[in-house]
Image (cartoon, rainbow, N blue to C red; front, side, top):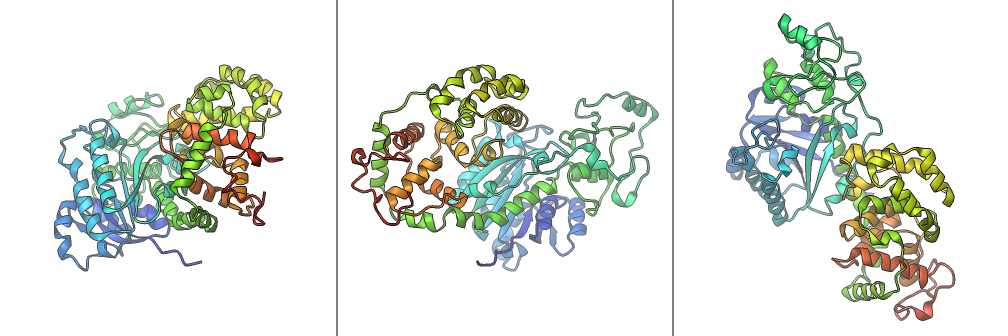
Length: 546
């Protein structure tokens, strides 16, 4: 196996270098970066002294780049871009005409000129609002014209071990393969960190100037006011809660939240810990500048997770398009697509109550019930269970004894706990809405390769074929290949079969295939004489494993 190429980065609009810090901690090389803030650059320079950190705007760099043949930027295979977010942020004016909102145009110029292997762009959620989403769309279209594959996700830092709920948009662009694969390689943390975890070992009453652990000199009147604050509260004065994850830090008014125990705002170091910085990362500049640097930063553990996903990207792509995919791909053509589409549309469809809905949650619930269960048996409890847990919020609060009494009828009593955990996850991570992305679905309790693809194809019209034993059996028989039923083969079959799906009626295609596998291409005694594919099927080949 070829040695994996190291990720080498250059950071545009780098700020204090938080994005670079996360990538560096994941093993990437950092060549430097640019920013217009001299104090933030001083912090970046202090923590990564080998990098070339320049005080320069992205506009100036785009103009000068044709004459900068030896610039470190040209040696990078990965560009990091955390463009200014003040024009999009809820903490700012959210002015769609803010000149900073159009800096993406200069980013496109730089990408077109340097052609890096990867671009990692991050910004605030405000970039997706009706007023501003045109900027994001223009960036995506511009990168696609240059020849990049694009994928966008909203990532919450708290899902990656950061003791703060902080959501950011991440756009990943890749020159080869599918950008979607990068997010499928993400590895979230399984433990939520709290404020107590963040502040552990840091004295609450003793300052340490070297670490920027210095307390604000509040007046007596303010201290009295802060001492009376209850946990939570508005952005300007909100008290942190020891055993909870902190809310999003903002730099508005350069005011940080209140310590959970003491009548004071938290220090820069305490804020940095809430952002996931280690104590080895030191900040330069005035206190107000340091507060702004911390509050505007991308949590380094989140950046580290994205970098690690990039590092796994090539190996993942080779698994998805491995030997089996390459062998099957030779037979992939429009004639085969037409034959399968016509067959799956004409096959007599079975009637089940869940086929009358495309509600993502109900289909997700149905797929959990159908795991290792006969469809006709699942049908007997489907309606009572849907009535008991009609949505994620009801599922998150359901009495397990009541739900278990229903699932026990079909021999899957333990599935009740999974349904409850699923409801909680959808509410906590996705605001009560079933996510549309494959990688987000795969991280939900009880969801695997088949269910994630089924939800996308049935509910969201995506060309994402759900692979189960039926798919393995059909492919093995039709193409005459011996399959072992491994996860690797499953991902390759998903990639191949998804390419054969028609646009527009993916749900009918999936249901048609399931009915075909149940009625014709059966596990035992298949009705080959009645199959419309018998002339091209290689079932009798000596290579067939089924």
